[in-house]
Structure formats: C-alpha cells, structure tokens
Image (cartoon, protein in one colour):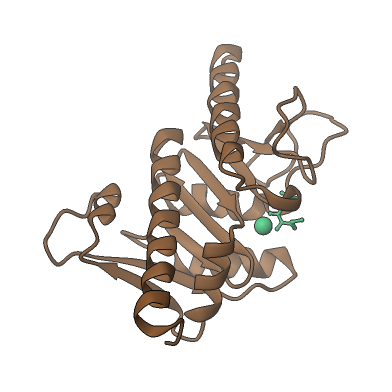
Length: 210
Ligand SMILES: CSCCC(=O)C(=O)COP(=O)(O)O
Ligand SMILES: [Zn+2]
C-alpha cells in the first residue's frame, strides 16, 4: 500500500468524521468509523478507542490488519468495536463502515426489536440505497447487544446479506456501510432521515403507540 493512498484515505475518513460530528452524532465519545486501505490482505483505518470524536487530531485513526490488530506498534487502541468493521469488510464489497449512536436509531431499535427488523416502503429516500421500484422495500435488521464483542460481531455477520446496507443494534446504535466514504455517509444520512420521519409520523398518527 502506498503512503499516498493511506494519506488520502485518512483525509477522507477525517472529513466524514467532521461532517458527522457537525450533526452531533458522537455523544459521549460514542461511535467509530473505518475506511478500507487494502483488500488483500485486508487493512483498514479505524478510529482510536474512547476519543472525543468531535476533535480532529493526528491520532484519530490507526491502521489495523485482517484480524483487527494494529499494523504498527502504537500506543493507540483500535475501537472496541473494530471486529464489526472487520466483518463488514469480509462479507460485503464495502470500502467504508460507519457506526453511530443517535436517539432516533436507539428508539427505533427498541420499538422494533421483537420484530427483528424495520422496513421502509413508499419513501422517496430509499432511493439513496438504489431502490428505484415503486414498491421496493428497504429492510434494516435489528440485533441484540451482547457485551462480548465477538458475539455482537457474529450476530451482525448473520444478518448481512444482499440489499442490506446497515444493521441496528438494540439500544446501542447502527452500523452502516457503502462501497466508499461518500456512499457510506449517504446511506447513514438516509437511514437517520427515515428513522426520524418514522418516529415523527408515529407520534402524529398514533400518539407514539404501535
Ligand atoms: C461510550 S460509547 C460505548 C462504546 C461504543 O459503543 C462506541 O461506539 C465507542 O467505542 P470506541 O471504542 O470505538 O470508542
Ligand atoms: Zn457503539
């Protein structure tokens, strides 16, 4: 991998991080982001664990390998949830994976947890997922939130399939991906728009009841 590629990927991820930060999408140091740098062997930049993701520093990301281990000796710790990013890269054609905690994604994850998914139909913004048919349906799986990260990563992996672009984690957040940083950010924005719209509509029409 060339130094220039690494620098470009770093810059791209830092820009996405700033854009998500401007939306207040990293409360309490939550959230983690990654971008693929090399396919074979897999290497990706991932956010360092526990950092204030609203700040931009030279220590925001570190390079990890196909086992989510740092490529070089460093004092930085990869995100506690790096294994989820690794699974995304193993099982999809993603080039970028984004994980955030918002009020909307947490409320939706709890409201629809028993159903195991939430679906969206007849919403213009599902076109952000390349779903253009009149009756197309966007499915978003919802998984439980075990504390043991390998268990969480396995639950995520079980729900990844074609035309799934993100998975909700119950009372935790969402992990979203795209072929590149632009597409991953587009997917994340569209998901959050759909969640907020759904909750607002539900409040209007059902007073919040299911
Ligand atoms: C304070 S948030 C709890 C951990 C978490 O869910 C998260 O997204 C951030 O963890 P990281 O190790 O990536 O900082
Ligand atoms: Zn998290």
